[in-house]
Each structure stands twice: as structure tokens, then as C-alpha cells.
Image (cartoon, rainbow, N blue to C red):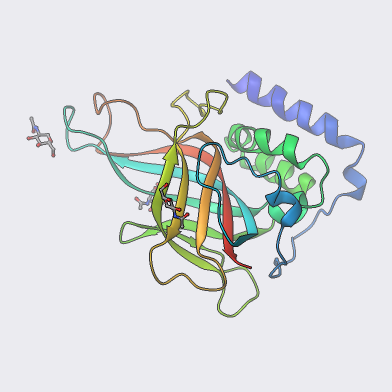
Length: 236
Ligand SMILES: *[C@@H]1O[C@H](CO)[C@@H](O)[C@H](O)[C@H]1NC(C)=O
Ligand SMILES: *[C@@H]1O[C@H](CO)[C@@H](O)[C@H](O)[C@H]1NC(C)=O
Ligand SMILES: *[C@@H]1O[C@H](CO)[C@@H](O)[C@H](O)[C@H]1NC(C)=O
């Protein structure tokens, strides 16, 4: 594991070394509210989920964090208690990247694998220009919440979501740091109270995060590291 993580990092850094001098090192500037991401929307990996209708892609965030679960005892069913993730801005950089479609499929798994060493993950995100934080993903009284509080807009974009569609992650999805499996892809629509010009979120390109099949041998609360891309839409 360690060896493969280090060699992955080495490959990443080798590939980047030639372009590093042109990269925006240093503290990232806060992201600004952005116009629609039409080019990126045209290569959205939607799987079998319902496409958005009459909506425009506003943000794409790379979520890195944990899915949280609880087990009452060894024979109880596993419960989901939520998730906590930082959302990094992928959209503004990838919208003008001719290789976006190819990169999308690898970003979640690669960043999850590098997340075991924070400095490696930060170096990768920084070198690629994905290090601007949009905000966070968490649960508000069991409601999945996407708060893009770093966006300079009043009110800032915020989605309170509810699940309206789901599909298993494709077999090619990165199964996570310990092979747990990738959480499903989702379509989340407004659960009431969303603001700032956004109302729909797709969770796509998931890596890791899945709970084990049973509570056997699990602690009463535990977290499974994961990465996912959150595609955030709003009215045109
Ligand atoms: C285990 O937890 C489940 C769900 O909370 C409960 O229904 C069951 O009675 C518990 N079993 C034991 C052996 O404590
Ligand atoms: C999920 O786990 C993280 C990491 O331990 C913790 O900080 C967070 O509060 C947990 N959130 C929920 C909703 O359980
Ligand atoms: C919610 O899902 C249903 C069933 O797939 C679909 O018909 C409907 O269009 C979806 N709603 C939105 C807002 O996409």
C-alpha cells in the first residue's frame, strides 16, 4: 500500500515536474461566482441517472472526506449517519481543459489515494489548480447539505438536497483505500431552502466510502474515507 502510494505520487510528480514552474503555487485566491460551465456540462458522466432539465452546470466540486456509519451491535444493520467532506473547485479549471473528459475518470481515485499523506494530496491539487476550496458537504439534521460559502456572492450557493435517483457506481470505480467499494452515484434535488442560484447536485465518479456488508467486527461508529465529484446545477 505504502509502496504503491509513494510510486503513484512519484509518477504524478514526475509528470508535473516539467510544467511546475508555470503552476500557481502559494495561497489560492478565493473563488468567484462563475458563469455556467457549458463545456464541462457537455461531457458530464451521467451514467443511468436522469439528466438535469432546464438547468445549467454552475460548479463541480471534488469532495474529499468520510462517509460515517454506526453499528448498534454485531448483528444490527449498519446505519448511515452522514458524511463530512471538503469541496475543492474542479469546475473552473476543467471547463477549459480539452482533456477534461479523460481526467474526470481518474481524479477521484487518485486524490483519494494521495489523501493518506496530506502533503501529497495538497501538492497534487495545487499543481493541477484544483486547490481552491468552494466550501463543504455535511448533513444538517439528516439532510445532505452543500455549502459553497467561499463563493463571493450574496447569498452564497447552498443546496439542501434529497435523493431523487441512484445507481451503483460502475465496476471501474475506485473501490477505496481498503477495497470497501465505491458509494452509489446520486441525483439530489432541492429539499427546500436551497439558495444562491443552485438547487440540484449530482454525486458522480465516486471512490471508496462504502460500508461493509454487516456490522460484524465493526466499532459503534466508524468512518470510511471517500472521494466524489459533486456537480452542482441551478436555473439558467
Ligand atoms: C442489536 O441492535 C439491533 C438494532 O438496534 C436491535 O434490534 C437488537 O435487539 C440488538 N441485538 C442485541 C443482541 O443486542
Ligand atoms: C463524520 O466523521 C467525521 C470524522 O470523524 C467527524 O468529524 C464528523 O463530525 C462526523 N459527522 C457525522 C455527521 O457523523
Ligand atoms: C426525479 O426522478 C423522477 C424519476 O426518475 C424523474 O421522472 C424526475 O424527472 C426527477 N426529477 C427531477 C427534478 O429531475
